[in-house]
Image (cartoon, rainbow, N blue to C red; front, side, top):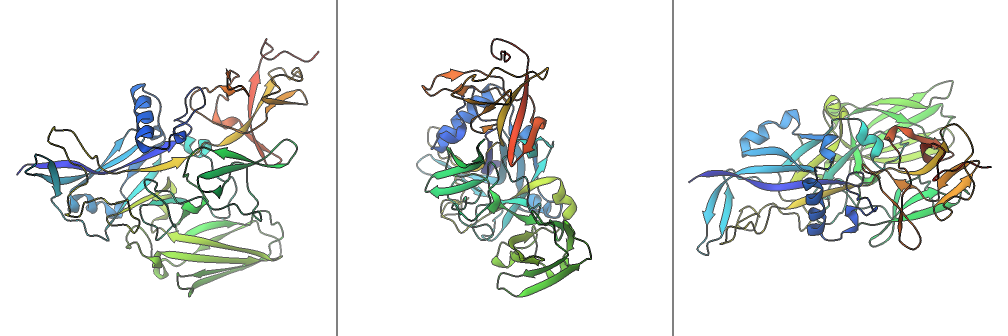
Length: 440
């Protein structure tokens, strides 16, 4: 019987930067996956730039045999990747074509896929914390064991509920109710504000748990640390290793090196709770932090990545299955030779970095005060957007209170972002014109 390669699953990495149209509408406003995929298809038809210009995908070096042993092929697809599996055709009496894998994949087998940087732009355009104690990496999965709950089709974990005790950064997400996710910012009066985001699920700090056994730890907003203690515990609360630091002068960061022999690490270990560790940190002046960590065995391999996708053959969340009850692939063709259903498509949603758009005259003159007051504040000869706006690959229009659209120049590049007084600004230099008259 003829051997075929058929899709086992796909992963779509949907990024607001690439998937926003000129009117400012983005793919996350579409609640049905079919509509999001249709949005993506129209972008593909128009030859629009996509996230794969910044990212590539690769099986870890120590797991390369996985492809050969199980008849798998990893391929890029528009705005993501697909995994094919060697299968044989099984025609049913009804005329439906089903596909049976040549090699059986064990239920506890997981398929690790590194998300590698092609360029550094992905870090500049993506909404993420600017400051963190540990520069950890994303871990996305169809299983909740390592990073918590989620719902199909998302591989990123759920956004945490709003916590009034937290110090949020501009753009940082919090959940206020079901399907009510908002992004934090300080307005120009330094009042805390929250901006609603269309969509049900986004990458967030709960996904950032992956790190090597050796990494730097930064003491953010603490400039008096002269003594620090680090206690690494396993999932049962047992101490795995302790590290202690002491100096006569304050230190802003330290380098931690845990013994790899004491750790269970990805990608080689099975997905179990014993991969999850807790790092307890205490220091001078009542400094206390607790971090959830999952370790990766190859620091060097991880360093050029933004994260890791882990697809378990039989995850512990309903809706993420790769095979039907008889062990056949989900995808099949009906009697009319039409694919129905397709292979499962998982999604990872990235928001763009939000910034206040700040317009300034290119000859350092003051702009006329009161321009576009529905959209802008006039401050010290500058025009500053009232709310942070998301960076996008193509120019987008402003929406006026009556829902009509209005053009003002967009930021040219992602490198023009400045941080001032806990706010992110994109500076846009403009010449004197009818759009931007000078102050008298």
